[in-house]
Image (cartoon, rainbow, N blue to C red; front, side, top):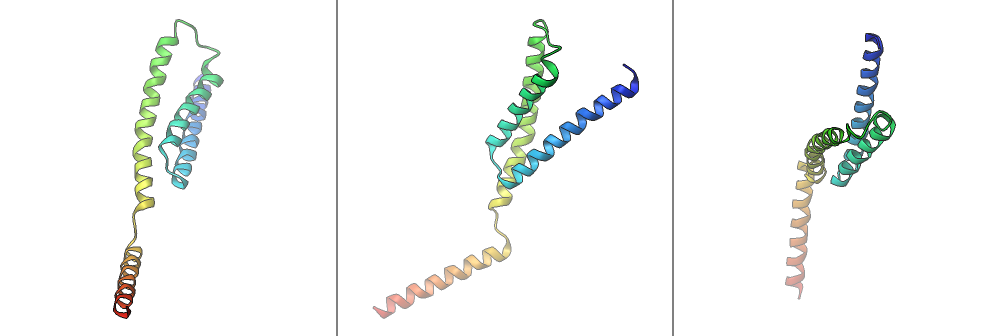
Length: 120
């Protein structure tokens, strides 16, 4: 295998990795859920195993491969969980105008309740 082939192979793997994380970031932006991260990591490792590694893996290499896969999955989950937490926080926080609207609604409800009490 010459250097250009090796560089092309590395670039294909990097492009696939970046496309995968780009896809999961878009999905997490739409609906930030921890199960999406877990599903992505498991599905990604299964697909990589089935398409690339099952053909060259031997029983002697299986324990090392399993350990490497577990470490890679742990790293991917460790990177994904803070991203989910950040996106969940971004979806639940209120802007200044929303906080002002909530205060106005609360004030109006208090005025209506006071008016109803004085009318009875």
